[in-house]
Amino acid sequence: MIAKKVLLVGNFGVGKTSLIRRFVLNEFSEDYISTIGVRVSTKIVELNSEKIKLLIWDVAGTKDDEKVPKAYFLGASAAMYVFDLSREETYLNIKSQINTVKELSGLEYITVVGNKKDLLTSTELEKINKIISIPIDLVTSAKDDENVEDAFIALAKQCLK
Image 1 (cartoon, rainbow, N blue to C red):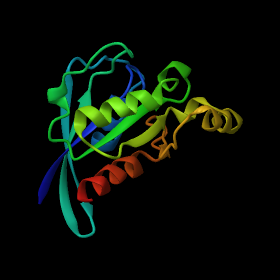
Image 2 (cartoon, rainbow, N blue to C red):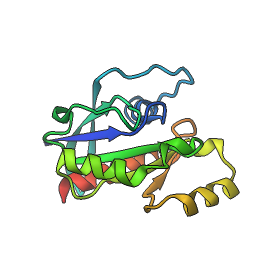
Image 3 (cartoon, rainbow, N blue to C red):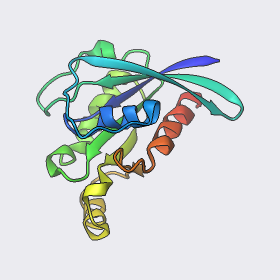
């Protein structure tokens, strides 16, 4: 079995912790508890008959002008940038935020996930897809358990590249 450090990053309140809880524990809570610093969870996934222990770093959400310690990013094999589909301020500067994550982590590719799909209609979702300046890899709902596992499997695949 191999262990790989993966990061979940993005603004505060976008659902990073909820995605992790849904993936690791298959639980969802409406309660919002802000992550302070970083919280690490683990889950073993099997991919191509290989077991991978994902060390999932839930990096505290920030505002655009706040800096996250570079040490959190060191040694990461993959990263997921999460934004809230229902809050425009979480994706307005998405391109520069992802570039910052790339610089800090040294990763060439970041998986981009729009969360909280359950709060939007399909028409609203189409409008957002047109506004966002970069491709979105997956649209998820931690609440409805939609595409959550797929998002983490995408991270695991990134680890093996």
